[in-house]
Image (cartoon, rainbow, N blue to C red; front, side, top):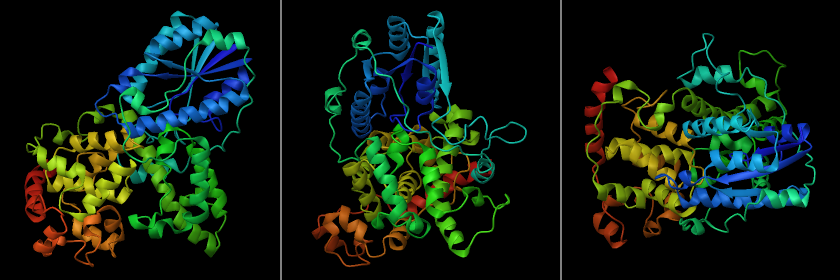
Length: 488
């Protein structure tokens, strides 16, 4: 082929980019393009942290592409108009893209494919975003999994190909670059009407690799032991990079395998392999806990692929007609702003507002608190998280919220309701995380820092709010409302 467009979406990197590598292999010239879609920017769940990370990753990608001589064509507008227009103006033979599995993206790509067909331009898409494509990881009868454990067991049986190197892109003729047009990547999300107030993770392929190396070298082999303690900073912080593809899941998977010196297929006890030494076994157990999180990501992507309705309604049919109690706007605002009077919840929500990120254990704690203590519809919390998370991914965020509220696939039982106090005492025993994010309580001793309302006068003197709800009463009401649905 002569000219191929590579349409970047959730693959903002050069290394191990499946569609880009195929374009570089098959075409004389590759024209990299990104289209900023106004419909995504106008969505009610969009937020400055995600857009800021995206723009920084794009600027970094553009700088890397400039060095190859094949600069990024940055466009704004409807992709189903912009991509065919660019292909027509350049005389492109094909458009390459990596598959995005969200319902909106699939519908968008179908429109682009149809428009390209009218221009007689080939559309070629590649599996890249996941280690195992969702249509492949299914039951023997072809039906999708709705429970994590059997999904994970089948997922582990698939071979995971090694990462691809950076492709060699041919330098583009300046006249072709001029004809392609495009403009500069915005310098900030504020230019798009989304001023950033959080201090977020830098977005770039280099930063993703730095994060992976630091995690593998210092934290991987303590992950299972320390992962639930938010004050220890023991997680990878790779989720924003996976969301936008500044790193591939294959790069992570194989880097972990190299670090533990064992075949990761050994995570599947049913699959024969070489006997492991005791040291390898210990490393594998720690690493296995981390890789389970990778599999959870792929599970939720598969759920979204097979059951796209979960974006708007519960996975479990018996919850479809369920009416959550009318939310008190003041209570929702207190939860959003970290002013509930429950220290671990408030610390987590303030961390989210300040950094655009929240520890996974605390995502469950705060979600269950909103849905099962405050009795607020999970969709309200899901939207607030998407607005504030750098790693806001529709599949993982939706899956987590539906799990926490007991409405989703493989959900927590309705009677599982995390107690903020017991979670705080167990996973932040010395109160260090709370003190870091709730400065009003910094001088309180343990265990008072976990439950300051035990001494209301002292709590008030600190300027910390009283609890907005009674935990025991909220829990009892949740059990009363949810128990009949569980039986249905």
